[in-house]
Length: 197
Image 1: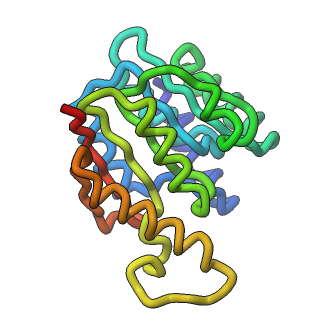
Image 2 (image 1 turned 180 degrees about the vertical axis):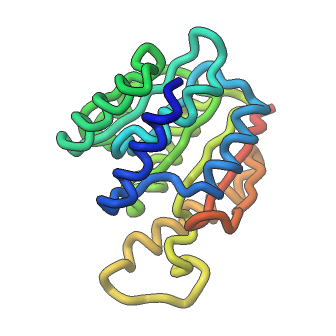
């Protein structure tokens, strides 16, 4: 992997205010991926490809990341970035809305990383649970959403997102087959380990 190129991608994204995974969140995910050694990862929300590129170095030999993005410009930039860092054989981008694409996928994944429309997190979770392997991990980034989710925040503009993130947390903490930690890294990360047995 070309680390210099990766650093450039990160700096450009930060300068252009493109949301990318924060360093402290990435540290936590790195540890999880090191432990799991995934064969397949599903990412919902590619942006410019930064997180998928970072995750790709933890894949087993021959492993793959499927990532979904609906913004055409971001997809073009992600493809370019993935090529620059020389990991195009490991990352496959699905172009379109995750709500439409997810139900058509029938792969099994060791890790699902959710970082897309906040209001759709409960739907993404339902699809992730359908495709996750036993002992797999589902990660949901920005789960605390600027602190709104754990406060009594109720402003109209973000109400749906906040309500749906709360619903997501309720589901992963109350489901007996899921063991969840909510970590205060970045903008909040929910780490849900699946135990289907």
